[in-house]
Length: 306
Ligand SMILES: [Zn+2]
Image (cartoon, rainbow, N blue to C red; front, side):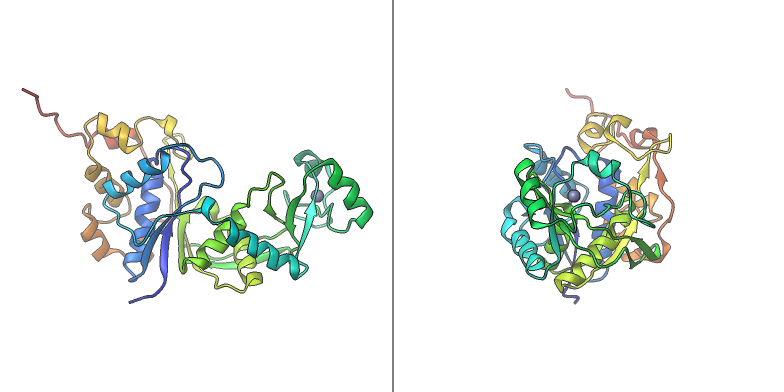
């Protein structure tokens, strides 16, 4: 028995599509195949839509996933995030930033700074400058990072080095930034295995670096390939019937979606068999290109109602 946990952490911005469900299946397989707990966390600090959470949980259960304990919502955890920011501030590791997005774009970047990195404009302001700018605009809180890059080890990508700049911990509208919330939550929930889409790999060095500053364990990472549409772009709801709700209307039951997703991973189509055969090293490393017809081909003939 492993005492750690894996997790799936959707944003309740709408229905999950089959790409999201495939990532959830993978996170579940990684956790369950290693004896870990599997938890669900609703990342609702931003982009929450009324009713979406209930539909997402229903769909995750419909594809066969189970989870441990209560579902946690980030909007209920403000005190934990406040405490983490207070600890970093007490250690001299934060500062206020008054920059608009435009000011950041137009600022001359520091020598050797990577593209998109915060140029450090507000890092060394005097107290008088701070007072003046504070009166103009609410401040965001940034981390005062002591490095410009950091390396992580990923189960699928190997060693990965990425940018660490003075990233935002709390936005100027008061909302806690994803990079802070995810690190605090994973640590508080005993998550030691993070499996998610590989679009999040570039932000992982920031999170691992922050975990070190907060004195919490850096989890193991596996960033899994995304699902693409036939044009090669990340699958989205506009690509057709790609949610369980839309597929059900076309006569495709959830267990057929599960089977297709598992087969796309080179696994047997029943979840129990897939768990038995699951080996991370055998997973496909390339994105899966989904042709919507592959889903609707799974439709069952409709029973005639008498
Ligand atoms: Zn600034």
